[in-house]
Length: 622
Image 1 (tube, one colour):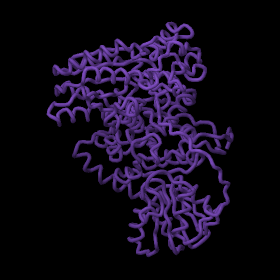
Image 2 (tube, one colour):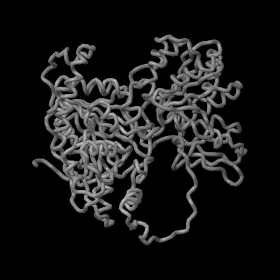
Image 3 (cartoon, helix red, strand yellow):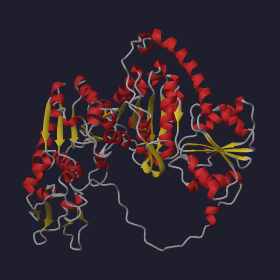
């Protein structure tokens, strides 16, 4: 291998570089943990080699961009997480299996077992079964880099989309050694060849294409037999794994003396039938270990039944391994000891007992100076003063943290864009008796799936006060850009016929409260009101200014220990009160000078340090 080096790499970076080595021309995605770093790497490193990469407005659009490139003959990838991700792209995904592709096309879906940053543990291997799309599953960064190259070649060879399913412990592990080679020249298309019989899915064409899909799937089932599955012969006990579970099984056998052979299946969809039956016929017992649902186990049981192979098969369906959360070496060893009737060596390892007090509970909180915290404070005060008892219909983003104390302003929250849709349902389901306040993010969520729902609210005359919290970036997934930097939310809201549209700075607390109060009166009169609460993300603001910010401190002589600043705003920079209940701000480490606490203090006890006006002016320019 010429021009290759050894590196320690994040799994997502290895995937991105592997795609470049395979000659991808087009990459599109929507940020979502744990997938975001793939497109970020391509934006940072791919352009000099001629790779086109973009953050799309949502996953459906991203899918169609990459899918369209592959229909033209270019090599392409699309990246997204599982929920609020592949689900959004399901319509074109299902159709892409019918049309097939001309250039290699890989769908990279990053699942999140353990729900570190997700609302559920959806296992997208099921989607491969549902859509007739093969699934490749890597187990570490080097394997992920190799598999994305293999998947692109496999896709192009069969003229069919391929999915690669990663999980958090592959995407976000930094592993090595990873062999990194020079990128290949991007494989763009020389021009799109019109094939309406194949690419235009009217019913007459689709009926024919379904038959072609099934014939192509039969060929794919044969070809996966030659994928780089790993078989380690060692015992009549056989462990069958897929993806990151292979690393746990390998550790159990190598480090903890478990007597078993291991078969790691690279393609959990479709299964390599011959590879599996060959391994199973040598075994007396089969144990299936996999991250997520028993997708591999269910297929394996059906396969062996069809082949009339009778051997005990154990896994998640027998409750040997946890079905909630991620696998760990402890949970894997627990399952293996039950299955094999051995003593778990981990329980006999001597440990040192340390007597310590458990750390205090620390629920997730807004960052110091987060404009969303100010928005939630102003909303809470305004609704309380009006005597309203609204339903706060929440959404996915940093502002999801509004569910916590002291705000408690996210009464329901299920998926991207759900705030408006569920809010409309509650309004109509209660026969118009409920004041609904949807809260959605301008940090891409509004453009992701909120815009069609806003149109629906206007079209169906559903009175609501819609708060769009715009912090100028897609903050929760790392500060990616989004359409708010170029497209006016205000103009869109006016264009679709919203009755009342206002833009306010959440750092202007009095004006914000007055505007919310005024908007609620519009809603009571049957109108749709939109308030855009705009102020840039505090992390991005301090980063762009390299930490040169004005700050605030508490004048202890003026403070009367009322608690408003630390009880109602909940800024992490305002530490728990001293013994005398007076507030204290930790400016050197935390305060970013947002000024909100100073505005709400009734005793003028919070003072600026530095040129606050100049700093807030710079911040407003984001």
